Amino acid sequence: MKKVFFLSFLIVLAGGQQAWGDMAMLPFIPGVSLFEPKQRAMIAWNGKEEILLLSMDLRASQPTKVLQAIPLPSEPVVKKGDVETFRRAHVLIRRKLRPATLGQGLQVGEIAGRGAAGEVTFHEKIGAHDITVTHVLDSAGFIRWVEETLRAAGATNPSMPEPLEPIIAAYLREGFKWFVFDVVSLDTRPKTSEAIQFRFAAKFLYYPLKVTRTAEGQTDIDLLVLSPRLLGKFSGFPIEQVELRHPPVSISSAELRSLNEEMDALLGHREDMKLRVWHIFGDLSSFEKDLIAR
Image 1 (tube, rainbow, N blue to C red):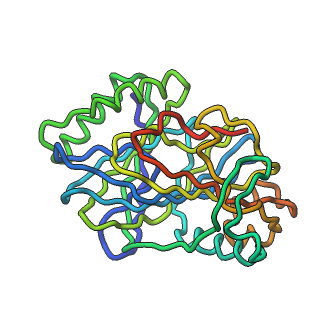
Image 2 (image 1 turned 180 degrees about the vertical axis):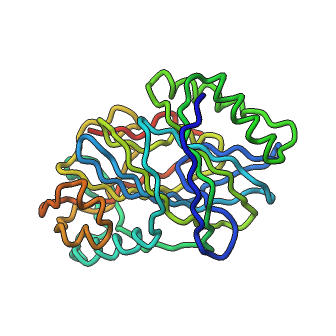
């Protein structure tokens, strides 16, 4: 395995370290349970590149440090994002929807669904530093690197969780050889991560799910999705388990620019973009495939 580069984000927040999802989590203390009750993402995909903005709520059954890892299909550019983007996007959607459309069951081409683009709530925010992007060449090297990293950071007798080893091997077989790592501190209270943005080449819209099977319990995922056209081919995570929160709303280039300038540029400053919220809910252990759409 080859370490490619190292980034430091000194985010001025109320202390602590950042966590972001959706990713594998390896506790430093054996037997500690990890939970991801809420995940938030905003995805812009133009058919060749994706920008993925991520934040999540995290907690542990007891205070611990955690090594996190997220797989990506190509080398990413990583930068700090703005967690308030999610709130602003939901406000924009609600302003554009007529009250009569909120809460209806929908069948609108991509996916069936129900419910509204609900209120976005956050817990105490945590910030981060020391993000590492790594090119993984083989699963054995990955496991050694993870265990050495945990040991160097103070973990006692670190070992790869048994369910994670075949998952990593499957990612490598499928061509996902780039991983982003961070070490974070959690306690028993849910905390909301500051957002991190990834930009990477992708022939499909992508959101990792199966790597989260190292955590426990149920999770609630809201994905704000932007693409030049509605998507109908889901080759990974079952389409039947994805709900559309509301009819897609049209947003202008100026409106998207007010949310995220880089996403507006990626999508070519179009005036006919459709923004929608995909909702996924379920037990983390049940996610056997990633969300892949075209």
